[in-house]
Image (cartoon, rainbow, N blue to C red; front, side, top):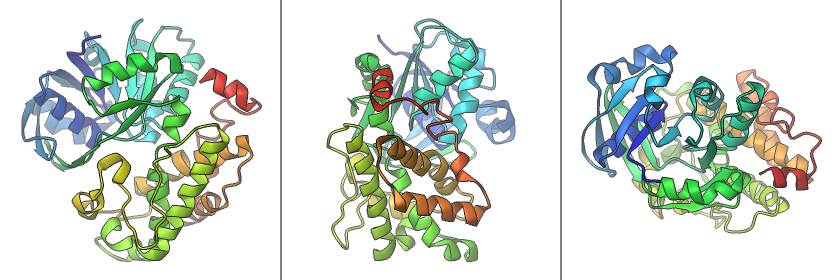
Length: 359
């Protein structure tokens, strides 16, 4: 399938960056944002432009379309990319699902088991349109919105594990996505992809351990200030639990984990190249409060998922559990009621073999 026209759903850091980058690379891009974000999206919608800065390239991208009209956004495209945080996957897919056409390919960038969430939405709505669902384990860039119509890319991904649901469609998804990002590579299945997402290892633990600093200060840079030897040890402990969960599900190395060597602070190596912490991490501001997505995304949609998949496979995750509990106390929220538990994903009561067969 030749990809010439794409729809990007999501007008945040990721969506704007993908739309600008792919436009400058010669694709026709329709960028969609949910109507409830009218105010923040207005500059892009009115101008039809996004200025790209940084290592992915420089230039002013003139979009084919910037819109709140989902039907218009999906018209005539060969590929649909959903680029939203994990907590936005449900609302965004529910918006687009009724308008999907037979043969459409939808890829979540990134996913974190988004394909299973999307599959459940299709079933609950009684939509039997034959579509292909895929997901990547991380974003193609570390990027931030730096102005009303401007984004900056600090570093590009060097590896993007990707899979489809069901996994026999992974070659089709990989072929399409490599036209956009040549560093895309196939993974075993979408559980493999979801458990290769190490943001939940990196963000919540150090954020929780720096709660006093974050709540007291007007400014904070987690990677520059918060990655001390103690917080590093917590990160590695969470990552080791993630790897044990992967192994229990029969997912083989490479696990793309954190370097457990004392004194090493490299956290981006496998996905963004060695030295990524210096090129990008220390320049990324935040979190500036404890309701940042480093907590509200990576705890309920990341750590709870790790723990829940661990429970299904008979693996204890005490460090993940501790961080989830502390985050819940700090934010007075029940993160264990996450949509990413086995019960809420529709996996409760299924044997491991049944789940793997479904994937």
